[in-house]
Each structure stands twice: as C-alpha cells, then as structure tokens.
Length: 463
Ligand SMILES: [Zn+2]
Image 1: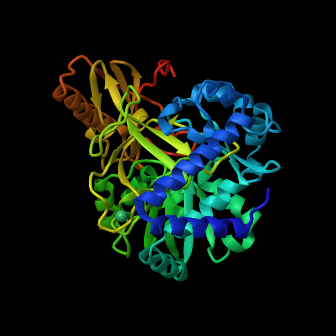
Image 2: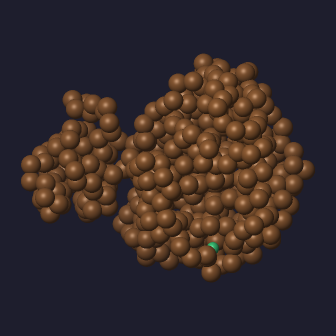
Image 3: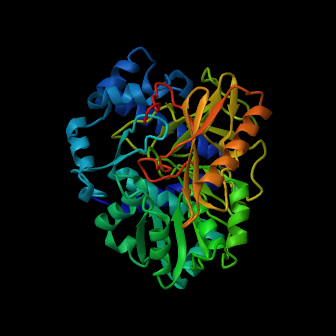
C-alpha cells in the first residue's frame, strides 16, 4: 500500500476549489464522482453488476435510481462485493484475528472492523486513495480557528487516545496505518494509546502517570467516566482539549466536562464519522457538523427510505462514499438518526450541516414505547459504573461496579427504584427490574453503554 503525498495534495486543492465554487460546484462535483464510481462498480464488482443490471447508462445515472444496500446482504456476498478479487473474506478475517497486525495493510488495502454495536460486525476495506482523500480533505476543511487550536495544543504536551484495544478498530488503527505509510505525517504529535477496556483505577493511574496530557481523544461514554473520576479527585490530569467520536456527545456531557475540567481551553471537538467512512464530515468553529459533500452523500430518510425534509429527525441515514472504489458503499443504510439544519450555517460554509441524534441501536423498546437511554438516571455516588440491561422485552437487570469499599446493596435498591419510576411514568407498569451479579460490560470496541437494549434476535436471557 502506498500513500502519495501528491495525490493527497490534489484532494486538498480539489476540496478547496469545490468549496469556493459554492453549491453549484459541489453538486456538479458530487454527481461526476457518483457516476464515475457507478461505472467502476458495474465493471469490477460482480454484486453491483447484478444489482445495477437494469439501470440506465452510468453517464446518465441519478442517485435515486440506485437501490438501498444493507450490511447483512453485503457481508453475505463479501467476495463479490469488492472491486478487487485478491481479498476473500476468509483472508480478511484471518488478518483481523491477529491483534499484532492492527494498522498493517494487506497488499494495497487497509482492513478494519466495525464494533458491531448495531449487530454483526462488518469488515471494512479502505483503499490507498481513500487514505489520501481523508488527509487531503481534512486539511482542505480546517478553518483558521482549527489550525490555531491544533498548533497551540501540540505545544502544550501529549496527545492520548483512549479507545478499544481488543480489535482492528479505526480509532487506534488509522493512526498506526498512517504512521506506517508516511512517518513524517504522524511526526510532531507524541501519541500515547490507552486501552479503554481496563478497570477504571488502572486507567486513572496510567493517565496520572503521564506528565502533561494536553489532548484526549475518546468515546463520550469513556469521557463520562473521566468526568466522574476528576470530580472525585482521583484523576489529576489537566488537558486543554478533548475530542470525541464513535458515539453521540450530548450537550449535558459537554457542560459536565467544562465544569469538571477548568483547564479546558477550547470546546470539545466532536467530528462525526464511522468505520465505513472515517472522514465523513468536519466540524466548524460554531460546533456544527458539515458533510464533505463532494466525496460523501448523506441522505436523511424515513423508515420507507424516502427523504425527510430538513429539520426533521430521520429514521436512518443512507451513506454513499465516493472516495472508496475498492469496497463500494452506495446508499448504504447506516442506522443513525440525523437531522439536517434548515438554514445555512453562519460560519459561511457552503456544505450542508446536520445534528446526530444517536444510534438507533441504543434506543430501548418496550412494546410500542421507545425510550432514550438518557431518561434513566444511572449515576450513584457509591458506584463507579451502572448498567441497565434489557434481557427480554419486559425484563431488565441492573449491573453495578461499586466504588472501593462500598456495598452494592444500597445502589441496587435506589437505582432499581428510579428505573421503575421511569417505566411507570411512561405507562409501563409491568416491567421487571432485577439485580444482577454480573459486572457492567463493554462493547467489543471498548465503548461503555450505560443502557444495553435488547437487539432483535438477541438472547441475553440466562447469560
Ligand atoms: Zn458551520
């Protein structure tokens, strides 16, 4: 796999040129990129050749001609999905099983896995042109504010990434890959990686042992834990900047972080991306997320896959990645709920902006009632972590990791009482909530979800 600085530079220049041309130039560029990708996948992906067999010529194709694609169907036909024949699924899985190979490319491509929080983990294949796109477009979309901020934070100290260490996740794998492909690009940032899955006291000790932590990149769920540890006086670090990803960052958590870390000089960076497309959007100085529309198409749709108007919360979102021609994601059902802003952003960017309302998979469903995980109060002074797990449609269990020396008994009583009250307030009187001896569990990628809803086909009962 080769990383060409020249090609990354052309993505940068092209990205600037497109932005200067406003909406008209962005839309023209997007359509040109789409038609080129459609032509390529019709030629080189047996699966898309079949899917697109009856469509009009690629040079006349419009987005709405193309069928929606979904992860389970694509994964089932992985060997026919890619536009290369040299990476069968068996080979990719074998690579992913070897933890020493995180960030190591296989020939011309890099391979990652999704965390599988919304079901079966997918195998994601990124081409070298995608990595060049990611770097070029990231630089093209930085505004003066971001450049200044990064320069300052670099001078202050060490950047720490706290993400899942038990797999080939993009969170830690992407920077390892770039380090391997182009060491000069990775230089200048002293980067320390800490595994999110370890016990909290060890995590706190490791952070406290680093002399000057200036920037922490992690999941919002881990950030919640850091806030708690800082408030309790156990965590000593004084970072200037946080950046988050992988989960929804709520305004509440932003507030708590500001309160707990007075050393914070800047707001929290929260760019939105996914393993399928790490550089999907960029965040402007007004904290809005803008889609990189020249290379990404992001459609907010309802349950029947029809577009929803701006300002309306979508049932899911369809992702088209125009910069990855090895593993085509075209009108791919991503499962996130988003809402596009109705007005253009006061920052002046011509790219459309949106809000993310969280992963569908994290919503709790009981009969016809759907609850956000945020309605449950799963905090207790005597517990480090509390988790509410749905074991069947109307049965839940509470898992507790008590603080040192504390008994879980009181925590169980009070939490179960408050959880039951939430259900009652929502008209659900017949929901059972029980104590569990199990400890709160992490997702495969090291994220912590304080509420684990039942997934379809799931059988958590008896575990
Ligand atoms: Zn903006």
